[in-house]
Image 1 (tube, one colour):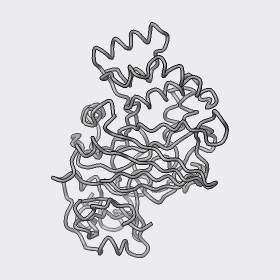
Image 2 (spheres, one colour):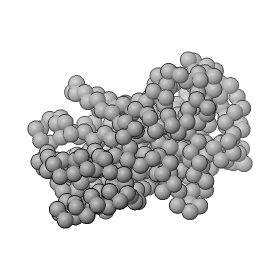
Image 3 (cartoon, helix red, strand yellow):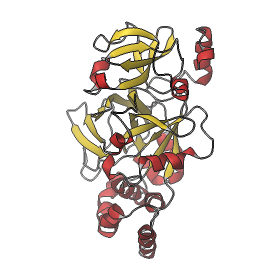
Image 4 (cartoon, helix red, strand yellow):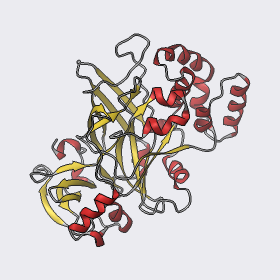
Length: 372
């Protein structure tokens, strides 16, 4: 995939940072004014570049139109950052999580439960402000009606759901296979905006992400969240981090529309949309809730959650949507570009072998360890 195909139309006006695999090892790259630069001689990690705000300099590679040098491929644009995610941040996704819970992960039971829940809580949950007095009153009413759920607690209660999505360095980038567990029968992509933060919790930019979701596993028990979320190649982030500047700010994140297209090997096509304007909690509130207390010295990234929850039947009536191997998933937003991945199983996706030790050894062998 050419870099140009993954960038937004206004890429010449923006400043982007990312990573590429060269024959020698991973490199930090930037795009400014339509020119690609190798920033590695200045700073050898994206985490370090963000910490020191070192986003300029390096060696010019060439124009974006010319692409990367031969033998180079794009990687996910993050490296040493902790990968976190927030869930149930949209009313629709809250309802779908309750459906998973009540269906015990059985997709065939979802349609009937969906109708019952919409009748009881559909309009109320869409209008309530999380943590407000009105939210507390809705909670009391739902408890009395026997409709309360742990998912509704994080949807309208004072505390957001924040979880660890994947280990440091395990995310994949655009063009790479994305994995679902081979023993999952009900799953879907989750198109999201990913905020990129320094150690102090200041948001410096944003990217796109696919927080691959196993509805059958998490639906059986919330205690299976880690097994549902953290699997080989199950976290995609990219194509680049668009850095905040006078022309691209947190307000652009707040108003972003994230489009999703799934193209199946059998000719199937599904289109979806994640509208950040409908999020129940402000993105900066999610960051503050994630930050904890001096907990991420190399910075962190935070998936903001998604409005998208596919309910259309793909094959069997009443069974809803689930992935097939070979699905091409494209997540696109006007200011952030496009993240494209082809679905495989986590078992068959390339093994994750470059962990922290191997990464540091490579930097040391190239004389770059002091530039982390």
